[in-house]
Amino acid sequence: MTPPAVGVLGYDRIGKRVADELARHPELSLAGVYDADPRRLALARACGLPLADGDLKRWAETCAAVVICQEWAPVLTVPWVLAPELPFACPLFGPVGAPPSRTHLRVACADALAFARLLLAVGPAERLFSSCARRAGHATEHRSASVDALEPLFELPREDYDLQTLLAPLVPSVYVRRTRVPYTHSHLHHLKIEFASPQSREAILDALRRQPRVHLASAADGFPDTAHVQEYDRDLGRPRGDRPEVFVWEETVAVVGRSLFLTADVSPDAAPVPDILDAVRHLALGGERS
Image (cartoon, rainbow, N blue to C red):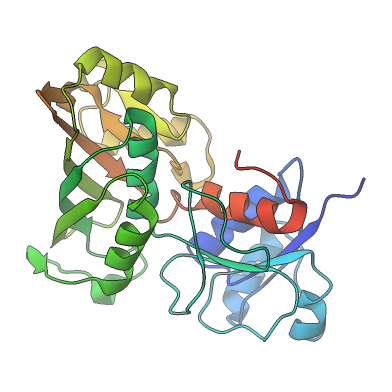
């Protein structure tokens, strides 16, 4: 059986990562890549990826599904998946609950996905609070990054919508306080999760170890900071040194009665990719989440 062919519109940050994964996916295939920037298309070609051919809308309509990672796309009748942060009204997809649509979905932001993975591992909670050191921007977005400042962020409506909507089945109260820092790699969260009854640290650690999209490791075992975490992913040979998992430092996991404390690191570029592929599988194959 020929794998369903999936197109990718937008070859920057998330789009290039989705294209890479589709090119080696066992159940899906990459139909091609489109980007309005000829330099990005040249890069995709240099990486050996197929490109969109001819009229964009006509080409996209031949795909089993399309992943949209840019702010403009033609009106399509085939199923499509939006990458996080795109400003379109669309049913929200993540690792919680039944997918709300069989025609079009938007994958939730990286932090909402990360919190959902943690909560699915450790069980439903009553409250979740995060103090977040948020990256100033991607390394290619130097104009938006603070060079020598810590910037409190008071409102990120789309992210907060994703958090409240996606996490509603798992925790009724979510609050994130963010500080933008001069850093380009990831978001670092100091989390407090409150449960209805007392927990044990051993049970929490075991649950986190069993969650496939969480990487629990110890600073004492070679992960004292985010730079060592990134180096480990590069040493694994992952493209761009990406880490789709949520990284949790074991030393930070503490349980005090009904409260769990931990520190987690989230890649905004890589963390959504597994869920984007899950959304594509749902639309193109009717498949379950992997």
